[in-house]
Length: 249
View 1 (spheres, rainbow, N blue to C red):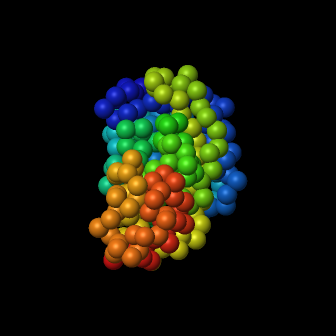
View 2: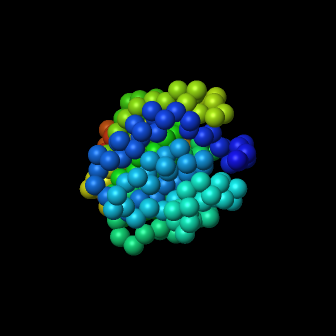
View 3: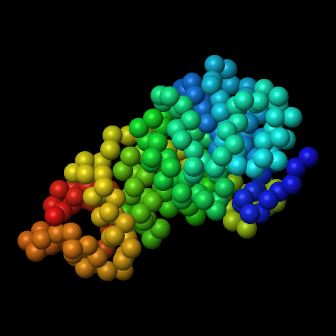
């Protein structure tokens, strides 16, 4: 058997219907290489191992869970990477897909990891805290629209697939969960990725201020006369931010 570790944010999925629903969403896309993040007790893994013609790997930090998984499914020997997803090098050569019931305590960092891998990521299907999933999928004008919304949506189409009740987990978390899908799309037409990230993060860092006051150091006086600078960060679309990078100093 195994123990649950609060320090690793472990809430293991126990609802078989939800597991099958996630894997069903995964199968809507074609892929040959698959990375599962945080397999834990194998709620998804056992279904993923049934997929034919797939080069499967999993990344798991908890050595106790690795032992449990390998004893329960001996086919997993040699397929589990003992590491944190945040420290992991790209797991495959070429394109790959990612799936996971992600640890909620590092969910934003995992999303930034997906940005690091965006050139090779085919699809990501992940379970997140509902609040995080809503932020990732939010559009401009929504009160939860923020840095993670803009940066993810600049490179991916985001689908908010379905929500998951607390009782579907052991132990039940104190929050609801939701599953989202990221599918790569042509990047927003910004001048420079570094400038784009800097502009977005700075604008939302002072989201109560108008854009003119929040990002003033990045633009000359003439550029700042544009009426768009009267708006606040949450009122700008991804394309608005991208277009502003062309006017930055």
